[in-house]
Image (cartoon, rainbow, N blue to C red):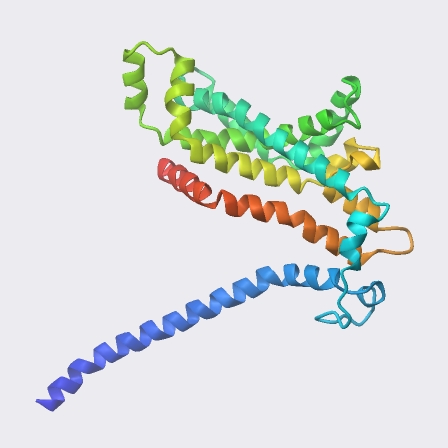
Length: 294
């Protein structure tokens, strides 16, 4: 009888051991992934707290020996117009996100619900346009802004950001609209609603998480854009943060690593706040889009 009991317990113990080993492997993988992802953030914060001499030392230190907030105080009290950089970035990125969503929503609704001959080629053309690198669009956009007298203006920078972010916004919004049951729109059509009222009063309230998700992604993409501000803006006071970091803290013979890392830490703060503020809406939006795609 004891032999039978031991033989019965052996598979159970083996299964528990396998599950325990799997848990250890999973936890180890998560810790390694977090360490890999957070290591640059740690190095950025540690360098921002170092003195100028220690930050530029050829022998790097994992933690500042004499921690100082001088680099952060220099952002607000120095000659660098950091507040203008921050305001320019926030303004252009916010307007870009709003404009992209306003244009992408009716375009995505047309691609999702309308039936016309070139619907599929137009959709793939938008997708191919999205796959083009940023550099390919520089020369056409530069000539366009030059003739429109929008170079070195925030309006021209918003046009550039929107041009590159709009194809992504259209396809993302299309996936959210595809998830809305067509029967709801048919019921509204029976009640006498025209197409534009169906979009604004029926579809848009149902895809608010998708609107938030799309706007957040477009905002983050515009915030991290470096090459467009460097190309389209010539006045330092009108620059955005990524370009200002390159132009203000690097020189021909010297790079202010401590100041640059302090500015980078402050630059990433709005992105983190925006991401965590809309995290639930983004998860709901991405999940609904995945269900629609399935």
